[in-house]
Image (cartoon, rainbow, N blue to C red; front, top):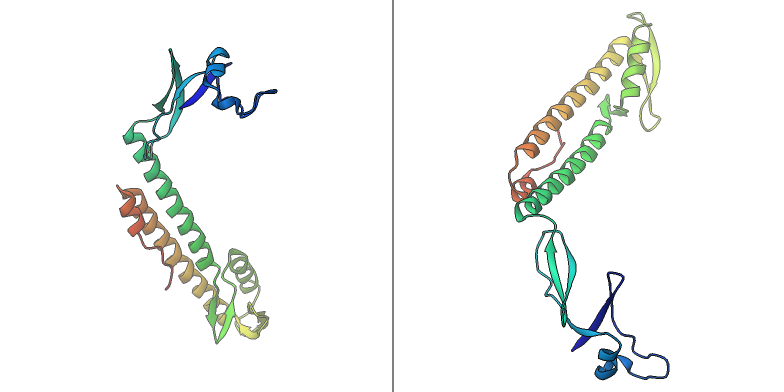
Length: 192
């Protein structure tokens, strides 16, 4: 049998030893004299609902479970958490895909926004017969004409269009999911 008392709204259990009393926590008579009461512990529920513990004090102290949300609220919270996790997974994989690079004439080029801006800037200053050294992700160099740079830009645009279209499809599926199982079934894949 367990004993406890409530002090300043906090449940306190007896110490094992108190002063010169060894095994104080086992001395039922002394515990009762010191204001301790039989403690009845509540069985912890297996649930996804948030709850907290309260104590009812009569001739015993009874632990009681108080739910902070309904079952529907708990299920909705878990569904929203699953959706948020899937969105985070999607955003991470989408960003990796956007920045994976594009291959032109066997050279891998950056595919980020900075690369698009740089391509637009240099193309606007070039004549049709001009050439420029353009470096790939691995510092491989390609002597590019204006047409080459436009082709690289088009590959980046195709990649970004694919990724953002796929992103919209995935996020729509996440928004429409009604259960955690449906969320988990959504495949996040940006392989083109």
